[in-house]
Image (spheres, rainbow, N blue to C red):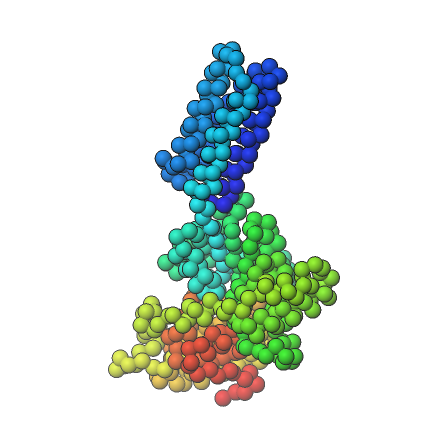
Length: 456
């Protein structure tokens, strides 16, 4: 039985207990009709409670057996009162109370409450930030785990919503999906809700559906847990210059509303706590938001599930598309060296048209060497939405480059949701600094960051 159902059962018992006191009072006053009505309500309550328990625990449960005895007792008392028999009010109350105590004890001891965990992922490509946690919950016999992909919108430059996306069909086949419009949060009230998007309405490029803003989700659970969809380069907490570059990640609506925030390391935890305190003060927050001791418990440096997934994925287990293999294999059947070329949002926003020119130069260089090296180009999944919203002046040229590259067919263009496949399949990383770099370093393979200012 889930917690919400257990609470519903306990509320029914409480109402029945209150009714017993009223029944004694009505019998003492001679208000037999009122006593009969309450006895009927108690019997109906017992039937409702029995149906609820049977639906979750199965037929023949000990609590249901006791409920049947309780309903039989209320029926017998009802019949005796209807027949005008002389009935002692205190004895009736005692009999009902004894049955209710047995049934309450059984409800407490014989019915196990199952936990319920919900995982809200808005982009399938970011699912790896939640997957290992979901797997642990799914393997727990006492936990019901739901994966619910939630819709999101691209945003116009003025902040209004544009196109809605639902990527529920892009998750791995082994992940059971529950549609966002088929899960009633008010009814389920899950024990835990996991999110990997903390921006709510602060994101200029995309937005999850407002129903899934962290402030709204907090209404339905006692534990809202945020795990970033990214990993950052490790930074020493006392390196003020480097901390300045990442502090904006430490204070967002989802972090403010979360009960727990899981970050990639203890050093990162220290940075989050320090920067959260500063930002909370500047935003005028009060209470526990300024309590360092509380924040030390809120932020946990347990590591990123992204590391778990990439480290557990083996090349031989990958599902490699035939179109990719045509690019990867040489004429003699051996494999070329595979370079993961990753292009990110931060570099786009910093360098604008120079960034697009750099991509053009890189593609030309790899095309000239494609007999020996296979290029696997994987842009950030929000790159086109970002250009549309924040850099529309470079969008057309970028899209032309992309189309030419795909049509030429000498390289791989990867816009799938599975970043780990690209990381594991490739032999080296080249491209912009991004969260993928930190992930790639976990593999021990070479990493080279491109310099937009340099042309080959």
